[in-house]
Amino acid sequence: MFTKRGNGYDRSPSTPKIQFETAPVLYACEIEEHYFGIKHRAFNEVQYENLKAVAFITRSMRDEISIIYGGNLEKYKDEVTNTLIASGNKLLKSKFAKSVTAWIYIGDDYVTNYNNDQEKALVELGRHIPTYHLIDVWKHLKNKFGEFSSVTKEKPVINAIHNRVPLKDIKNLNN
Image (cartoon, rainbow, N blue to C red):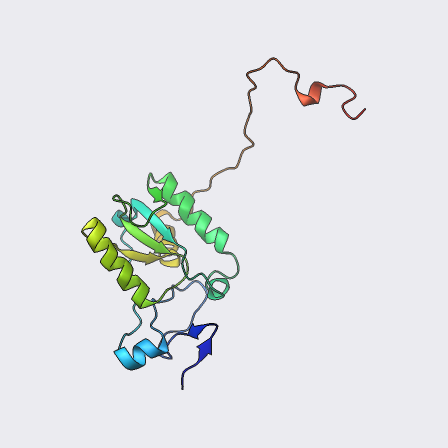
């Protein structure tokens, strides 16, 4: 009958399986599908103009993350983040910020949570928010720009404002 995982019921059997570099779907649990007819739902198709001010959704980041990103989530997130910043787009901290133009899910989530967030966005912002998956955004940016922008991590130069001797100039420092 129903398969139980953790503290609750998991995905319905009709939900597509998780695959490497393939965006999952917003899924319905077995009970929601069986009793209420709620079905899984695909993420929106990525439109570049909606990536001007995005918020990352990190809810429901479970074991499936390692399958989707091949154990290298940071690579995908960094490539997308750096390319968006280099293109002049903004990364927002709040998914309900007035200027948000899209939500980017890193993992997956229940359709019910998605519907609740969209209803809240409609009340607070007066509009629905396009919802993408990080893998879809990654693929879209890869097709659009070819290569991803990288941010070089240089060591910061600290210019002291006091007339103190730098540690490197202290003789017998360990004495």
